Amino acid sequence: MRSEHILKVDNLVVGYEEKTVIHDVSLEIPDGKISVIIGANACGKSTLLKAMTRIITPKSGVVTLDGEPIRPMNPKQLARICGLLPQDPVVPEGVTVSDLVARGRYPHQKFLQGQTKQDLEAVTEAMEIMDIIELANRSMNELSGGQRQRAWIATALAQQTDILFLDEPTTFLDINYQIEILDLMADLNQRKQTTIVMVLHDINLAARYADQLFAMKNGKLIAQGAPNDIVTEKLIMDVFGMKSRIISDTVSKSPYVIPIGRHFCDL
Amino acid sequence: MMNHLENLAFIEEGQKKRKIRYRIVEAVLLLLAIILCGLMMTVGNTYYSPRTVIQVLAGKDVQGAAFTILTLRLPRMIAGITTGFSFGLAGSVFQTMLRNPLANPNIIGITSASSAGAVFCILILHAGGSIVFGGSILAATVTAIMIYLLSKLKKYSTGRLILVGIGFQALMNSAVSYFLLIGSEKDLAGALRWMSGSLNGVQMTSIYLLLVAMLICVPLILFYAKSLKILELGEESATTMGVNTNKARGILLVSSVVLVAVATATTGPIAFVSFLSGPIAKRITGHGNSSPVIAGLFGVVLVLAADMIGQQAFAIRFPVGVITGLLGAPYLIYLLIRMNRHGEF
Image (cartoon, rainbow over all chains, first blue to last red; front, top):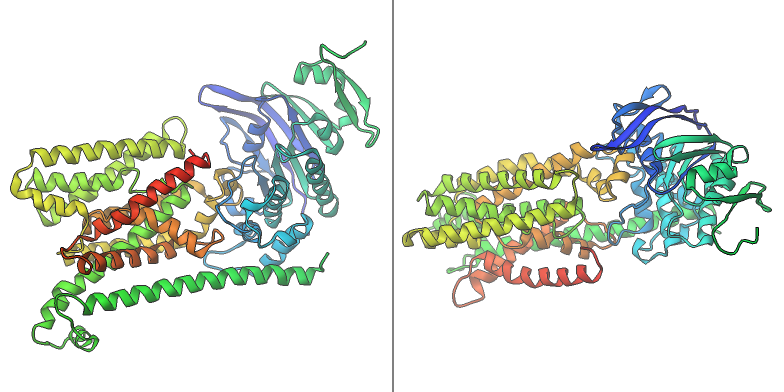
């Protein structure tokens, strides 16, 4: 059912007016894996995600999917392969959860065609994966932050793409909901081999859930690889400008960053 | 945890319920519009029975009735239907796409520009008829383009579009005041009548032009109604869900501006119809399930009902725009207070 995809970024330069936000970044997203882009505020990580999803036009360089540049591709065709959960999606007033999720079927629908059996099937399945069936007829405005985020992810899942981008999906959520969302993403990756590309703020959650980390600084890609290979005290210094100790996460065996501030350290 | 088939049925049932409510709202609005049309044709200075009306419409020359029905009441009714639908439909497209009820031709100066253009033609050029019609369309179109270009400077934002639009509205309103000050007294009555928005004496030629505009713009808007629902989710979602955002937005905006401009040129600005229809249609369909068509139907009912009230309810006759203005102003205040409370500015 799922087909393999090669998503590549070549010599990408992105900027707003005179300011250049991304300087000459090249990378390849590993297929069927979870990739996480990390970096300090304003390092260009969200911009990179937006360039890969065609929201922003790069100044130069190219993003290709299976060897073809994505820019001239048919929008609906691309939307059947790549989906995105934006950082700040807009909820139409009063819309119910299942109606919102159903809008995710847009790239699969023909003009003037109503909902098909496959559409209903995809909507239901997406809501089952995110465990929000009981919320189907509730209004989005009544939901908690965590529930709302799950509804948005279900909308992206209903799109049934092989690649899913998420722009800081855990921001503003309590820690339990953050874990819940990331666990669901890991489930999705394992069950359907969906390629997941996320921007995450929390370096420790990134190190735990990522197969591949991309570390950015000042618009440049400065390191990439498996968390256990690349997360070092030096990298954290380079990326965040902060001293730290790296220990092994006792739960997941992934690297765990402990910040060293000016207080409370008896070293 | 329910099983998959139960889940499917549960989701489908909810969707069906909302669809039924939508169809009921549609049917009720349609029925109300038909009833109002019937009343407009029969009730007036003289009452004509539905039978007489039908006979006249079928081409029979009934003494006395034929002139009143064919020359006075029929154009009035058609004008009410076409402008009501155009205002409601176009207004709701604006509001949905720009995700703000204030982003409406009434508020962002396009309607005021129509008035300024028309009043200029009446008072300064001493023109009438088709020149006023053309002048008002020209002014509205040029203003819409300027608002769009100015709000696009650097980076487009809806907030800026609304503020630029409100600025243009002030500018256009002061232009109208200026023309009224320097205009000659004999033209003033005509200008004022135009500005209040009235179904009186609408020329059939302008209605034909409006019908042509509707024949082109309404299908375009309906064709893009699905994309509009995706655009509503924000620029980023729409792009990654496969909407060609620039094309869809461009076509929807241009079609709506043309509809509003031609409809306004036909009857004058019928206050607040395009502003009220969308949000009220949303309220009655519920669940964020409204559509431009429902808003258009509501616009028809609003214009026809307001015209009936203006013509029949008081000792003096009021043009339809005065009545819709009375309804719309309190709603605008309510909306501003509510948006302020929710921090939507």
